[in-house]
Amino acid sequence: MAKRAITALLAVVMVAAFTISASAAPTYTLRFNHVLGPNHPYHKWLQVWADRVYERTNGDLQILVFHSSQLGVEEDIIEQIRMGVPVGQNTDSARMGNYVPEIAVMNGPYFVESLEEVWALNDLPMVQEWIDKLANEYGIRVLSFNWVQGFRHFMTNKPISKPADLAGLKIRTPPAPIWQESVRALGAVPTAMNFGEMYTGIQQGVVDGAELVYDNIEDHALHEVLDYVNETKHFLLINFEVISERWFQSLPKEYQEILVEECNKAGMEASYEIERDTAAKRARAQELGMTIHTDIDYDAFRKAGLAAYERLGLTKVREEIYRQLGKI
Image (tube, rainbow, N blue to C red; front, side, top):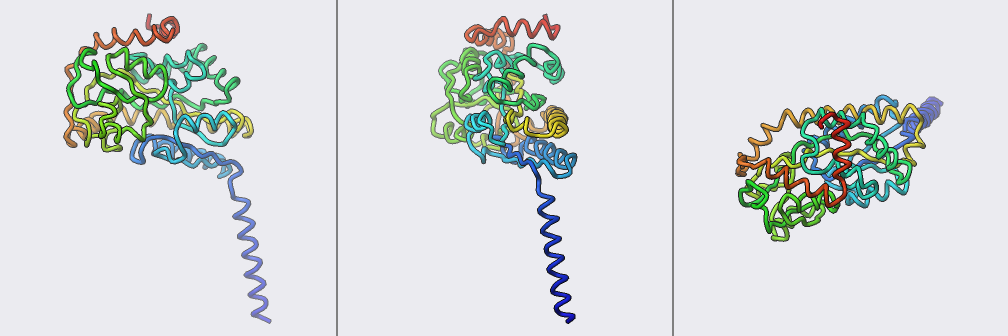
């Protein structure tokens, strides 16, 4: 009798445990992809974002973060986003410019040069129009562009001081017009290549170098195939965190607000951390054997970079943004 009672009690406990477990399962799950390595600051801060959202929604909205393009190539993920798939991607305005050409201006040479200028872009009506167009016409919801990886520099096997020094060098770029035209305007030969193929591409001589941030060096062992970091600072890289507009609209209003608020907050924290740690990452590149080349003719690079805006018809767009920012 006692044995049957214990068995019955165990059965009740197991059913209750299953019920609790089932009820605790998230209603909404977002898989979020980025191309960067597991040690890049973005991976940590994207996980912080995920944890905060999970906590504020009492576990009902779960974000699973995948590094190193584990979910696939960036451009493919963006197309899945447009189709309504519950995935997300850390991307940039260059790729968003494939849909709304004007927004690519934010990825142009020497467009902005401080975090404060990036934060100010959030308040500009023109920028908000582009964001709305991405959502309403292309199904891409921009949660935040308060994610700044820092300055990008040309990384090569010879010192670069001026645009002419890049002549004939094939430099890896993402497959987006503003990126390719910018690298071309700055003096190099742009060569489109996926991020994950870059190490092999340099090793095999398909490209002669890349333009990257300091955090990319050790994460992708680029010190093994490149000798110089030439501190051209030609892009202050602004990243966009994007998801499906269709999936976003399926969320309760409260969850939408939490998703955006926490993404903006984590992005700013990540950006400030990267800025603070630049000197340490620079020193680490030197420890790994790279030479930091600082004899740069910035005036020549800035002047050369203007050609990218001209070629893509973005000169007036850039000027209008600068007017709204009070830069001219």
